[in-house]
Structure formats: structure tokens, C-alpha cells
Length: 446
Figure 1 (cartoon, one colour):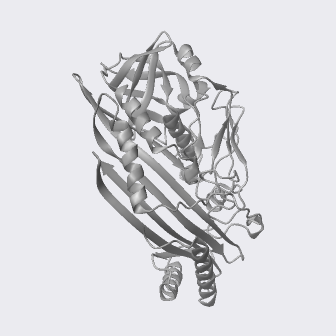
Figure 2 (cartoon, rainbow, N blue to C red):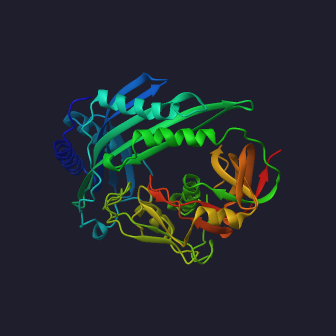
């Protein structure tokens, strides 16, 4: 592996460099300044058909400086956090600011909003793993999948492990830093029958390597997912219920968050402009943000403006209760920041959860979608159209796999038509959700 990563030393160095950049900006006449710095180190290995394909050892670092001359803003960055480089970056940012136009919304977030509670959120768990050990684990993952009857070949298995430090500081006197880690396995396999080849995959991801599934379980699950796709047909065309697998349901949440993000709102590039308080979902549905959740994938006590993060409620009793705003987008909209510079952190549903079998029974006849293709989501109109693959359901029972079809609708109608959320919650990412049953969409198949 690469040289040992001393997170504490890197944290101290980046904090020192950030203070240096702030002082240089002050001496060069900046009215305000903010600095973001990070360093990450990781290892990734991939294997295919029992052979090592790649071993990647990475180390990335960067520092970005933004200065304000009144309401004029200049930004510059570098991948070198050395003293000479920092000086050059600050000088460039100041020079840029002198030639930019006035922007009344530009500037730091209010000093009174800076984070004062900076607890350890238990998101840093280094993995003392050698390259040889990583290769062994990836090979074990692939072997477990390849060993299943019916699996023809492998598209590979991989392991990644990394840790890093990020620092944010500004001329209000705020300086916040956080160490973090992320580890994962994945495996993709290929099966074949008289109808052709199918492939599928599975993965596990966690902050703490002890929370990962075993490589064998990931390989076995990838094999199960691949084999069940054999014999796929094209479904009938019509208006049908659609059940989104948990990982795809998380994408529907992501589309919602994009629609209520301040940047899209002040640009009038969202179908949810001026919709605060409107009913979007059934009354039983809510969506909350928990940025201080211990050990979670996106936890942080401060956002990218240095503002203290807090629990937010975006959907309450089915209604749009809040937008997702940074300090800048809030000013553009004449509102207050929701401490979401950099996005939402740890989204959690507040809804009654239903066993997947019950959702299938409610569906009766329709499709389960396990894979989506394309980027057919229009943020301005909410129109939704994606290529898909999954399973046909009849009388509440999965009958056979289906592929080469599209599903289409409108996000607002889909949210309003949410008929149930599954208890099969996927916790691998920052959005935790189970399957979503949408009462009706256009399915275009054979």
C-alpha cells in the first residue's frame, strides 16, 4: 500500500495552511475569505476471472480559496498545499475578484450561524489492509459468485478503501475539520441461456470495514441477482403500477432534492418553484435530514459554508415544508439558509413501512423495476422517462424477468401516487429507503 496516512498530521497541516491563506487574503486587501482544503488516500483493486486486473493506489489533495472584495467574488484552487502555491492561489483569487461584477448575494454566511458544536460523529475508521490482503478479498468475492451453477463468467470484482481529511475555514474565525473513511466491495457476473446473456451485480459499502458484508456474501448475492434475470421477455404496454427497488427509489428522492435545491430554484429550473406548503405526497409520507447521525455516510456538524448543520424536515404530512438552501441561494431567494451548502446529509423517511410481499399484493399486476438506463428526467417540467429492466408481476406474484422497456410519467404525479414504502430499507448510502410502489405509470414494452 502507499505510505501510511497520518490523519491527525494531515488535519493539523491543512488547518495551518488554511489559516495561512486567510491571513494572506487579509493582507492583500480582501474584505472576507473562505478556504476549503482536503486530502484523501485510498487503494482500489479489481480482479476478473481469477486474475488481478488493476491495483490503484491514490493520493489526492487540493485547496480552494474564495475572496470577497465587497460583493465581488474571486476563486482559485490548486492541488498543491505548499506555502508558495497557497500564496499564488490567494493572489489569483484576489486578482479575479477585482475584475468580476457586483453580486449582492455574494459573501460568507452570517457569523452568528457558524458551527459551534463540532462533535466526533464516528465517521473515521481506517482499514489496515495490505495490497495482498485486498486482492485476496476481491478474489474471494468473485470466486463465491463464479462458483454458483449457471454463472458463465465474471465482469469482475473490486475492493476500494480510503480515508481523508477535509477542512473549511473563513474570516469569521471559523475553522472546522473532519476525518472520514469509506470502504466497499462489489461484484458483477454474467449468466447465459438460450435467450442470451444477462449480467447483474451487488455491492456493500460502509464507513467502518466491520460493517461490510463478507466478500462471499456479496459474490453470492451478485450471482443470485444475475441468475434470476435469465429468460427475460418484454412486458406488455399499458398504464400499470411500478415497484422501484430500494436503490432506485433513492434516485426518486434524489430527484426531489434536486428540485428543491436553491440553485435550481433561483434559476427557475425546477418544477417545484414557489411550491412551499403544497401537498406533493400522501399525508402519511415525510422526509427528514439527520446530518448529526453518528456513524452515517454523510454526517457532518457543519456545511460547506461553515454553518451549523441541523435536522431538517423537507416533507411533512405530504407537504413541501422546506427548500434545501445554502447561504448564497437563500439570499437569492430572500430566505434563510437551511445549512445545506454541499447538499443534504443523511435523508431518512418518516412513513409506515410495508413488507415487500404486501406491496406486491397491492400491485396485483405490474412491473418491479430493478435497473434503469438513461438520464430521462426533466428537472424543469418533472417529466420522467427511463429505459428499464426488472420483473413482471401477476396476481401479486413475480412471474418472470422483463427487459427492453421504458417507464414514463411525471415526478409530481409519481410522488402523489406513492402507494407504499417497503421495509426492505437500503442503508448503504446517505438516502435510506425501501421499495416505492407507484400506483400508475406508462410501461412501454412489446
